[in-house]
Length: 175
Image (tube, rainbow, N blue to C red; front, side, top):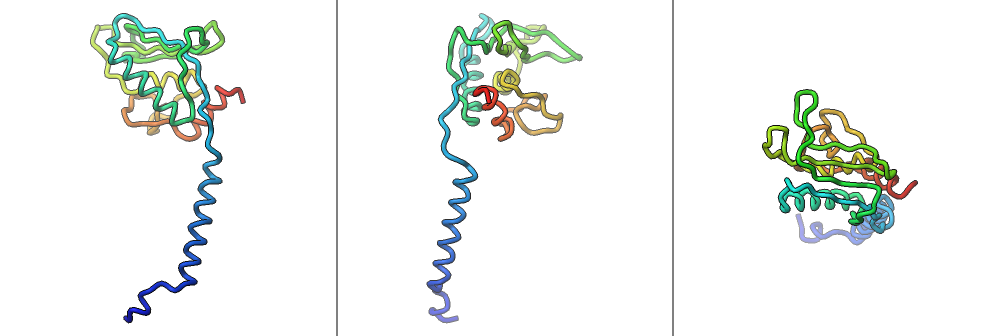
């Protein structure tokens, strides 16, 4: 093999460059224009049972997961959507309830996260606030074997899917 044949030919370089340009343009079109984060007003209340570091961890994780979807939490004591950190939520179907969400009288949704089970032992929280806020923002559980944040079991590394993000953005923006 000669040195001459090892060098790329000019037309190959031009084709490669054109292909890269088309690929970059397609990616930019698929991603769409950069969006400004959509604010989510949220009233946050904390029961005395919760250590400050644990609350901060849940709020930080929820903030990160929602930011990945283009949503920004804005603390607002008068907001219709609420996040409460409570002492305990009891049991259901033989298991301890770690979090719950439900419609509230203010026209929004309330998410609650329990610090401990009925026996007083602290729970092992795995993005519970983020999961419950997903319900408040219009999401339902995915099936039992799904690997996303809305699966009905705790998951430390899961994220919202692109579809789930779109549903939450639409719910918050009213579209």
